[in-house]
Structure formats: structure tokens, C-alpha cells
Length: 279
Length: 311
Image (cartoon, rainbow over all chains, first blue to last red; front, side):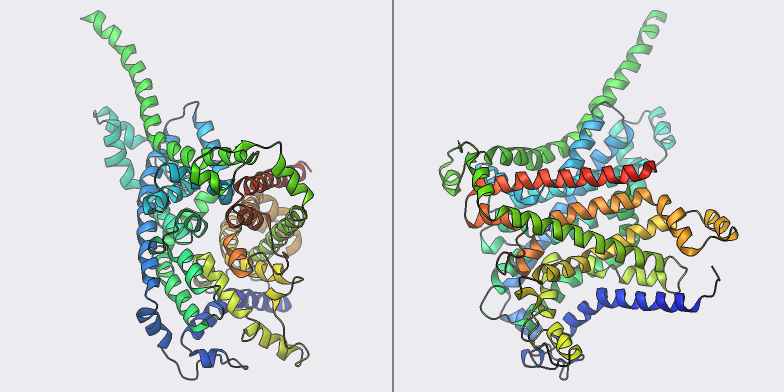
């Protein structure tokens, strides 16, 4: 490891700097623009730090464009409930697949894995009709169910890989003591896979926060839209974009997710690696 | 008494197995139900719909689609939109996946060299992955903005003012590249993270032994590291292929499929047929062909990967 090779190590730093610049500069640029007035943002020679930093766009977003917060609130509801349901179902199914090996396991895994591949548009063409018949079109429960289905394949595989890591000896001891299967799962195994539950919950929250296609097809009522769909419908495609406002929206729409990710990143990183490698 | 215990023993055992079976079914049932109702059935149903005349009026009236002798498919193959969309999709998928893998691998290898602050960099570089897709689109649309965008300014400076109207998304020749840059930006972090975890599993003693034997860096990388990471690489690349095949929101927000159809992939074409032209049968035909193509590409990729394994 201690080999000294100057050109190689210079090359390494240059490459690292270039890739990091590509990944991080755009975020800085959005942040800076959100604190500029449109006058400054539209200057022919851009300023890399605002001449006159202002929170004007933030105030404008909170006062004039507060429809945004309706979408924001809806998204919290939809993502939160989806994450909760997904985590519960993934615990059950993940445990089932990890602990009991019956002939249908292979089929279940095949169904889950192939479900991850299908294009969302293909599902939406029928789901629109199906939801309509079930009176779930234009409702948040309908959107939540559709999103839960989209989250389950990956999260079940992820959860089951966490259960694989729990030794069965503890459970067997509890069975000898006469505990029921459900009690063993609930009182003994679940507390041991808390990191997995967090990984699954946060993953589902982040992924459904990102949803666009489910919402634009299943929800037509503006008051029920989630963030991505709401922003796309209301603030884009008008004749002139208000870029300071859009950059402010970008910041407000991203910050909670960044906080969530950084706060739980230990679990997230472990979970993503485990889930991807197993799935 | 003694006979009854003798009988009870096997009965308990049988009961345990059936009990386990019932319990395991009960655990799996809710997930299976949700997956079948909201994924499998809709996908099969949309394949069926692709063979019928099925439009928005069918949804309103509740009338089932009518078999139309492959008309959706015939129209697609005869119209001029399908093949360009296939070409754009393949170009986008191959381009983004290759670039994503190269950049991700480069970053992962650098972060794995025992660099100071590697852990910090690893967590900071994940930020674009957390940014919602629509917002990633907005981030890059602002950079690419034709009048006030940073890229237009940068190109102007670097060319000494010769090119002063660079608008990557407005030119049919470069629009797909513009979208691909945004896709890369969002996807490189996860690729790096997964490849890095694969790199960390390569046993050090093997590398040390090779160093003692005088193997060069590149020799070690291609002869030890890559083969050792085969399964991780295979998963990362398959995930990237599927992800980019499915890419919709980014393209739809950034270009809407234009200019002059230059970024119309199969995802955009199917959505437009189904929900803009309101011809759901035709949209379903596009998604059916799209799924076939995706299965073909993934299978081909797996086959290539395995064939290389043989050598």
C-alpha cells in the first residue's frame, strides 16, 4: 500500500476531484441560486456566490405558492404510510421466506424478482381501470396500495437477508418453552432485526418520496397530488419558469430526504448492500 | 396411556409441519396478494389489452376491449415511431450503464485505496442519489437553461465566445446526452457504493501475495479484483440496465421526448400513446414490446457474462 508513485497519485486526486465536482457542484449551484433574486440569477455572467443573498424566494414559496405545501404534506402522508405498511408486510414475508423452506418459496421469490422488472407504465395502463372499478382512483389509499406493491419486492428480499443473519438457536429455545410462533417472531426475532426494519422503512420512504408516475396517472385531483407530480403540473411547463422559485422548491423538496439519509445512513448503507447483493 | 403417547408423538410432528406450512403461508400471503393484485395482474392485463381496441371511452363506459387482429402492433410497426424509440432506448441504456460503471468503479477504487476521509467522501457523494428524480431533472435543466444556464456560460468562456448559444436539451443531436448526464449524476453514487462494498470483500492476502510475486497494478486489478467481484458487478450492471430501461420521469420532465422526438424512448412513447393520445391499447402494445426487449437484453447480458466465466 505504501508504494510511492507520484503521477499515479496525482492522477488519482485529479480524477477524484473531477467526479466529486460532477456529483456535488450541481447541488451547490441549486443552493446558491435559491438565495438569489431572479435578476441576479439571470445575469449573463453568473455569480458563484450571491451578491445580495436573499430569502425572497423562500418567503414567496411560503406565502404566495403555498399549494406546494399541500403536495408536500400529501407526500409525507403517502410516503409515511407506505413505508409503514411495507415494513410490516416485509417483516412477515421476509421471515416466512427466510425461516421456512417449502416448495412454494421458489415461486414466491420468482414472482417478487420479476415484479421489479416490469415497466411502471405497463402496470398503470391496467391499474387505472382496476382502481377505477375498486373506487380507489383519485384517492390516497389507492396510491398508497399501488406504491406499496412497487416497494415490496426489493424490501421483502432485503428483510429476508436480515433474518438470515439471525441464528435460529434463540427461537428453538423459545419453542421448547412453549411460545407460539407469532410470539417468537414478535418478541424474539423482530427486536433483533431493528436495523433491517429501519433500512426497509427509510428505503421505502425515500423511494416513494421520489414517485412521479404513480401519482400522475392515479391522481387527478390537485389537492391530493404528491410533490413531484404537483411541482411538475403547477410550476413547470408554464411559459416562463421562475428559476429562483424552482431552485427553492428543489432545496425544500430535498432537504428532509438528505437529513433522513444522513441520520440513518449506517443502516441504509448496510441495507442497500445486503438487499442488492441478495436480490 | 402408553399407546396414546406413542400415537401422540408422530401426530405432534405432523402437526408441527402443517402448522409451519400454514404459518409460513400466512406470513407470505399479504405480500403475495398485494404483489399479484397490483403488479402481476395489471401487467398480464395490459398485455391482453395490447391485442384489443381499448381507449379512454372503454374506461368511462366500463366496456371491455375488442380484439382487433394485432392492429395496435401493425400500426406501431408501420408507423415511424417505434424503431427510433427502440434505438433511443438502447442508446440511452448502453451509454448510461457503461459510463455509470466506469465512473462508479473509478470512484470506488479510489475510495478503497485507504484515502484519508474516504468515509466522509462516501457519505457526501451519496447526496445526488437521495435527490428526488424530478428535482434532479430541475437541477440539470437549470444548469442547461438556454439563456441563463451555467453550461451555456461555461461553453461560451471555453470557446472564447465562438459558441454563445449552447443549449444541450434543445438540439436533437445532444438532447439525449443532456438527459443521460442527469441520469448518471443520480445513479453513479449507488453504483459506487455497491462496487465499493464488493471491493472491500476482495481478500487482502491474495493481493499481497500477487504484489510479492511482482504483479503490476493493472494485472492485479484485472486478474484478481475483477474476477473476485464478478457477482457484485453482475448485480450492479443488471440493476443499472433495468433502472435505465424504466427511466421515465427524468426524460419526461427534461424534454418531454423532444426536440423532434430525439429523446423519445419506449417509456415516453408508451406513456404518450396511453395517456396523452388516450389510446391505452396502443400504449400497452409498446410496453409489451418494451418488456420483451428488456428481457432479451438482460438475458443476453447474463449469457455474455456467463460465457466469459467459462474462460
